[in-house]
Structures are given as C-alpha cells and as structure tokens.
Image 1: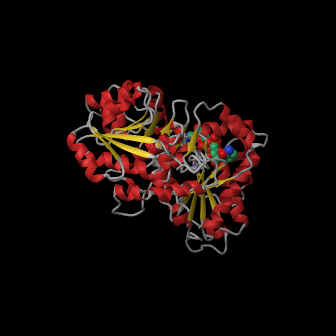
Image 2 (image 1 turned 90 degrees about the vertical axis):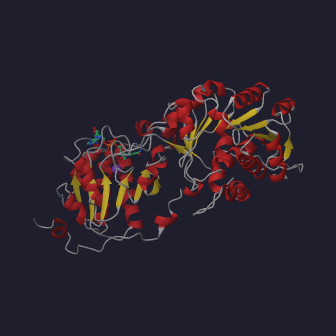
Image 3 (image 1 turned 180 degrees about the vertical axis):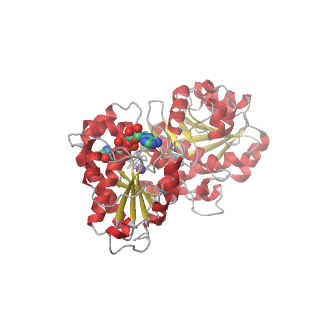
Length: 506
Ligand SMILES: NC(=O)C1=CN([C@@H]2O[C@H](COP(=O)(O)OP(=O)(O)OC[C@H]3O[C@@H](n4cnc5c(N)ncnc54)[C@H](O)[C@@H]3O)[C@@H](O)[C@H]2O)[C@@H](O)CC1
Ligand SMILES: [K+]
C-alpha cells in the first residue's frame, strides 16, 4: 500500500511533535478571565440555534481555533484528522484544510462515511487532501492525531474499533471540543474515551471539562472564542433552570474590609466537639484563620473541655452542655460534625440550633446522625458530605455529580457541598458550581474539618450560603500546599495566603 501521506507531501515525514512552549505543565490551570458559566451541550445547541451567525461560520471559526492551537502547541508533523458524522467532524475538516495550507502533512480518515449533511458535508466536499482508511495502523504512523469524531453529547458509546484507532495514536491526541465518547454534561465517558493531550473547546467550558474523569481525559484545556454572540448564549441560558458555573473568585466576593476599622469577615462561630477533640480543634483553627471574629469550642464532655483548653488557646472554650449557648444570638453560626459522634446528641444539637435560628454547617458526625433520614437536616444552611456520607443520606451519587448534589439540595433545602477531587456545590434554587483548584494533596485526614471551619467563617462573615460554600471550597483548594506529605494543619496555615489571593482576584 503506498504511503498516501508521503505521496501527497513530498517533504514528509517530519519529526514527532512536542509541546512548543511547555504549556502542558503550567497550562493545566484555567485562565482566570474565562467566563464562569458552564454550558451543557444541549444549552450550547440552543445557543447555536438562537445565534444570528450561521453554523457554517461558527464551524469555520472553530476549525481555525483547532488549527491555531495545533500550530501553537506542536511542531509540524504528520497529522491525521479522525472525522465523525456530525459537526465535530466538520470542525476537524476545517482544521485539516488550514493545517495543510500552513504546510503541514495532513490526512483525514472518516469513522464511517464522510458527514452527509449541513456545513460538515460542505467541509468534507472541500477536502482535497489524502483520505486514509480508518485503521489503527494509520493512527500509529501519525505524529499528531486530531480527534474530531464526536462532540459532547454522544448518543451511544464509541465503537470498539474507533477506540482502538485512537489508542494507536503515534503521538499526542488533540481533541476537538471533548475527547470523543465523553459526556460533556457529566464528565463521564459513555463507555470509554481516550485521553487527549490538549482539548480545544468553544465559547464556554462544559461541566464535563471540569468534572472527573473528564478533566483528566481532556488534558490541557483551551477555550476559543468562535464569535457566538453573547445574546445567543444568554437566550440559551434563559431556558436553563439549573445554571452551572466553575468555582472561582467572581462567582462570589469576600466581604469587603470595614472602612470603620472593624476587623473584616467577623462573626462568631461555634464548633461543638466531643471525644475526637482534634477534629473540632482543626475546624475551630480554620475558622479563626479564615477571619471569624470569635470562635467558641463548645465541649460535649469535661474531657473534651480539658483537651480544648490545652490545645486551642485562641478560642473560647465553653463547658458542657453545649445547648446552653444556643440562646446567645451573637453566636450565630454553628459548625456541627467535626469531632461529633453520629448519635442522638448530634441530632438534638442540630435540631436545637435550627430551632434557635442559627446558621448551621453540618458535616461528618452531624451527617452520619441522619443516615437514611436526610429530611432531619432541613433548616441547615450548608451540608458537606463526601461520597460515602452522601450515599448513606441520599443513595449513591451515581455518574452525574451535579444532578446528585442538586437533588440533595432540593431534598434538604440546604446548600450541598458534595466533596471530592471535583467538589460540586449546589443550591436549592438550581445553581451549582464545579470546583477545580484542589490539588491531590488535599486527600488527607482532617482536611474536611478544615473545610467545615472555613465554611463557618464565611457564613459568619455574612455571605449567603451558596457563596459562602463556594468561597470556602475554593479557599481550601488554594490553601493546600502542592506535593506529598501535606497535613491538614498545613492547609490551615495556607488560609491567610489564600484569602489575600481571593482579595487580589476581586
Ligand atoms: N457553539 C459551538 O460550540 C459549536 C460547535 N460546533 C461543533 O459541533 C459539535 C457538535 O455537533 P453535532 O451536534 O453534530 O454532534 P456530533 O459531531 O457529535 O455528531 C452527532 C452525530 O453523531 C452520531 N453519533 C452519536 N454517537 C455516536 C457514536 N457513538 N458512534 C457513531 N455516531 C454517533 C449521532 O447519531 C449524530 O448523527 C461540537 O462538538 C463542536 O465540535 C461547531 O461546528 C459550531 C459551533
Ligand atoms: K471530539
């Protein structure tokens, strides 16, 4: 079989590509100026339909963005564009033509047949370069593979043969919009998806670019403006009862410094704790560092009171019974859970705090106490379950973390922080945010207690619950040192620095 690449391009083959500017490392973090809204593929399709700009023009811009990203990131090399049946394939064909025009040796390969209708079919008709069989051997000989098989709403799993072709890629994979097979709404592949080195997407990020495993499958993310009018996006979002965002400063604002000279981000946080005094102390320490004006450690036992007095000199220690403090309206925010056994006492304390009109953050033991009976959490401002606690309260999280967190928020009326490496924060009104700044080092004992404390401080400072929860999750991610051997105490030490970075991002 003749080498169609070489037959067509007399100067090919060229060396394998490599990242041209080292962006593969640094570029993993998202640019702070990118819009905060996340659009599902369905909302994006509505925006396309509402747009006065024809899809062919959007496709031309999308293909140009892909070609530009390839040229910015990789050295010229044998490039194989894998083309699917829809507009994702159309974007790939536009990129193929532009790369070829720039002197790159390019071939395309159709998953089945060339796209049959619309602007993608027109892009296929305009392709004059080599067309190779859709086979692993061809992908293996390419230095760069452009995955333009499917967009973010696959109707069925990618066929095994297509996965085989992608896996055989002889060099990095550049994914158009999403790595094919990935569901842009949930971040879960339908069946399987093959990881990309770089994903170029358009107009807005999708939830699936940030939720796991989607975020890892995408590799470096590049968001391109393709001229989709903002009004069309706004119109598409109007129909979206459930708005999704990426969690970053701008979605929330820390309370401004009080010009009258009072300390800012004040308020009084109570952390109730018993036998496991270390957890309550971590939460209290985090609340203090996050700017709570005063912190009371409410001891559930005489032993806990002694441990608190010895270990947390900056906090007020209150002797049992903790309920005695509920009448003090100045002690407005209660963090219940860290160091609290999941028992009747935890249930009574939470119910009492809610009855007294206090803002409650329910974590750990205060969630365990309501296993199988989540309606008891009604009245809490914020609940912070990890996947295990979530399952015991609401049933398994399942593949759609955003939907699961929204369901829990609706059921309890509480802002729900579904913790994990891709923490989701959902409000009962349908808003939800996906967090993306948490380093792996956060997966260590005690960091949940630190988060509960920061959350209490944000609430006590006067932020509404959704904003308080989002800010706390972001601050925790920002406060965590990167690398191995990180302790919860190190995260606590990082809070002041994280606060000033949030202030600077304002
Ligand atoms: N606003 C935007 O973001 C724009 C996006 N564009 C591109 O348009 C794409 C979306 O286009 P489409 O809606 O045509 O979606 P696709 O390109 O994913 O194509 C959908 C077609 O693929 C078929 N299909 C689904 N799963 C399959 C599977 N597993 N195996 C084989 N066939 C399968 C479906 O039956 C349908 O016919 C985006 O990903 C993006 O690349 C641009 O072209 C225009 C503007
Ligand atoms: K794709």
